[in-house]
Length: 487
Image (cartoon, rainbow, N blue to C red):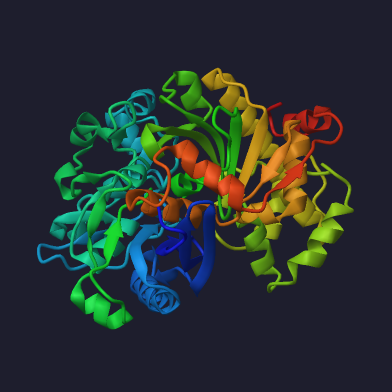
């Protein structure tokens, strides 16, 4: 292996911003620098809420150009959020900006689906929790539309950008597992579900595994970005959560839970096989596929979206002083269900949080600091409930909670999560998705060890981590949970 000679570009797209990171990898070395960051702003058109995917692609090209000025790139990999997709016509042209998962077009669609495939059977076949924006519901909602009728291919967001870079088309497996059209046991398409719902699976290109080649950057893109070819694009775990979990710095054999924090919080366990019981379905747990035949058994929680929307409503005040004031607020005075669908849409978040508190007989937060404390207490409580439920449903106990992603920077949230779970929290790395992206590329090109444990050991040796010990008992957290109808 070369001593950090190889550099990898990680295109990491989140729900509010995108960035291109340059990772340098060698024996005992894993360094990440940001080459370019750009906003990801949805656009509301008369027909609904959409992603500005052309703007995102322009940001990717700008980022690759900046990355190429920093280093001679060995490979490029792309990860992003899940479920959303673009439709291509017979010529391979995009048929319109992809619809945003927060759009309302899927309202009431689940009930139509369950008439054809009852919810218990759908879960037993696909293992996915109910979320109104799953790709399956989006495709059913689009049924009969002129756009879907004209479509000859469906590409998930990272696969669409890969197609534009390389001219090749594929469907990466970890992201495909979020469509609710994959059988998590066989790790292939669930054809019976698709057939009964009238979804044509031939619209999806063949499945690709993380670590496999996705093609070479085409000459026109090389000229646009001033990069030197040939430059391969490597398929990574293209669902950003799958990349983030791959970079959890757990030791081999460690019994850990994880919380991937950002706009969403994804809290759960890494398993060898899915949990497809009816009890698991009723607890709304999902079985998504991870790197190296793992299963990400987790629950989706609204995450720091709640805080982001509050800050937006308040015209973007400095978060630091607000967190300091929130730390001094009365703990657990009011909590809300951080996974509740009423918080999914943007707008008026402080007022909606106050309304939810009042609806459950709790006082509404009196000021901004109290609102922030309510959000962070609610997130920590949701983390506790998800991890406790995951252990019970999977028959697996844990000794530590690993917090990765942007929320690992929020020391108050990490401490509250330790308190709520009654377990130590180890926070970091914050750029877990980009690191996981880089590590899969580096492994494919021979710059790391071969096993998932090897990748994680490199993260643990090279990235700063913080540890939080639980304070007190969890009884107050259990009492707070009972206010929301669960212990």
